[in-house]
Image 1: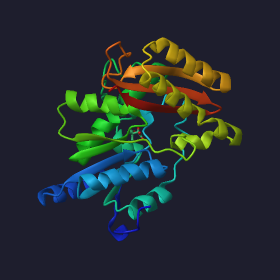
Image 2: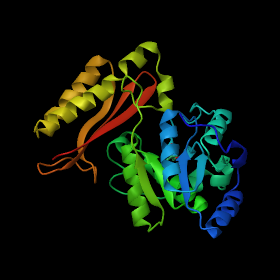
Image 3: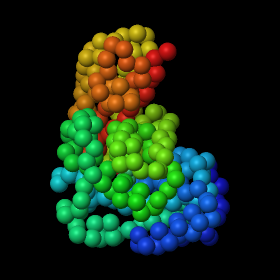
Image 4: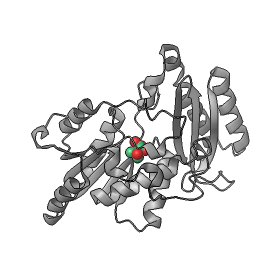
Length: 292
Ligand code: PAF
C-alpha cells in the first residue's frame, strides 16, 4: 500500500494555463515530469501506474478527464463512474504533485465534434476499433492534446488497454513527440479478473463468471507455449468457451504484440487479446507471451 505523504502539496487545477505555468517552473528547475492520464474513478490498477510514475521522475501530474470524443453514441459516457473527491484523495495520498481536472469546454472549446482529430490508421480500426468506430481517434486526439498541455518527459499507460497503448506509441512516434511512453503491467483481482472501472457494471453472478476471460487467455497462451501454431483453432476455442459460459465475445485473437497484425508462423512476440460482453459490461483483457 502507498503511504500517505506530501498530500498537502498536491495542487488541483482546471485550466491549461495553470498546468503549463506549474510544469514550466519544474522544467526550469530541471525536474523530470511524469504524467498519468486517466478518466478517474481510480482503483488499485491506477495505483500501479502511480507507483510506476514515481520511479520515472521527480514530479508527477495526473489528469482526470472523461473524454467524450472516445465514446460512441450508444456507449456509457453519461453513466461512466465519476468519483472526483475520492480520486483527489487517492492521488494526494500517492504523492501526486498536480491534478488536472478540466471541464469539457477547456479541452474542446469548439465542442468535441468540431475539434481537429488525430487518426492513427490501420491499428485503430481493428480489434476494439472494429466494434467501437472512432474510439481510438478520440483517444489519440485527447492524449495528443494532453501531451501538449502537460509537456511531460514520461507518460504511463496500463497494458490492460493493450491496443490503446500500441496506438499511443505509434502516434507519439509518428508525430515526433518527445515524451517517452511506458507501459505498466495489468493489475488483477485475486481471482484473475483485470481491474477496470467497468467491473462495477457486473452483478454478483456476472462478477463470479468474469474471471473466465483471464482463464481462457491463459489457456490460449499455454497452447502457444506448447508449440501450437494453428491460431484459428486457439481463437475458436477461446471464443466458444466464453460464449458457452454466457459472454458475447467481440473478438478473441492471437496477434503480433508489436504490430497487432494477425500472428504468423514466425511470430515471436505474441499477445492474445479479447473483448467480451457480460451484461452491461464490455470487458477487455490480454496476455503477452514471448516464444523462446
Ligand atoms: O485509458 C484511459 O483511461 C483513457 O482512454 C485515456 C488514456 C485517459 C484517454 O482518455
